[in-house]
Image (tube, rainbow, N blue to C red; front, side, top):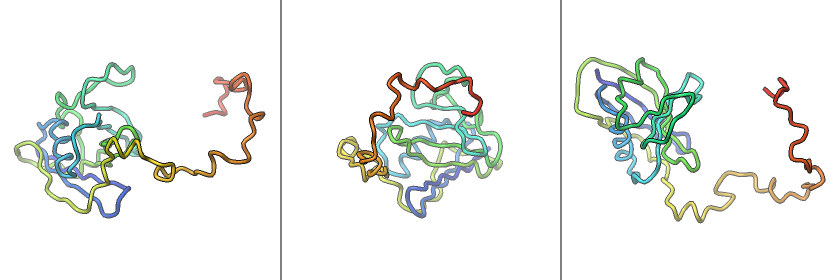
Length: 179
């Protein structure tokens, strides 16, 4: 089978990548094709997440073995074939390309068609990819670069006496109103 996977990103306008993949290709093959198509360095601890229809992360597929999770099996890109995890059209996934700031591409298995091919190929490339942050970029970030309300921190309305000196003494995990 041949899978058609479409990736989008909301950080930049008009970004789209479409990949055609042999179902027996691995997530590592897809990872390498993504990096090549957006011209990113392969120096991040990237991950794929399978998602539900509301884009909530479920199963993680990591670049390297990360240890055991109680909720999900530990899946590694090199050992995980696309056909083992992607089974039906419209299935959603996230590719985290910047784990420090949780920047990612939204993906969807847009089509499954009969046939075979070698590995993974980017078949359509529209728009410029968001900038990959270098180590120097991260060290030189300013608050205004992070889309943080700078007025919130350092506000004149801050009052030390409003904090609970016992450290969240009123918090009750049995309280159903929290959820």
